[in-house]
Image (cartoon, rainbow, N blue to C red; front, top):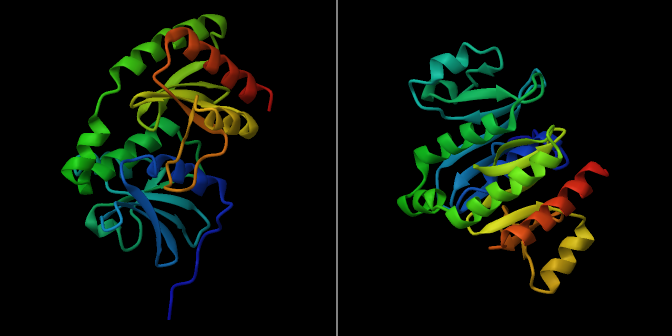
Length: 232
């Protein structure tokens, strides 16, 4: 007898977890025990689980560094999850508490590093120095114009957000920006952009990767992205 499905695909918290977990090299999602699990490759090990607990908590289950686990469990946002807890895993309640997206990304990446293959770690650590340099120049300009915006990390890469919502980040050799789906389609169709696909074969409709832009081009796209996000 199979396990009952404990989640729905339209769960916004699950969508946030997918965005972070599936951005990691070769990461896939597979439903097991009625829950979404995230693995380092098609035949890889689990590094994260999304679980709707019996008390309706929405748990992100990850495996931290052993010396970090006691401090995490002393935080009221964390608990030792059933079954996984004795093996060193922790569950972060995404529903009952305000959660920092950067903290979620760091927890997921740390857990991924426990099980990832050498080639996957090499890809994760590969530097995108040139685009990051361009992005830092662009970010400085944007923050001068909009001092309440913030820099943060999205997919473990430097990003910009306004009102808590990310609208741009730099990763690998690309500047990635959030735009209307019709604009994304236009940029991909004419070759100026590439689909942003954390999940293989399932591009994010409102994100587009701009390969290696210069500072002026990058600034233009980032301004477009900010205007799109703030107008919603």
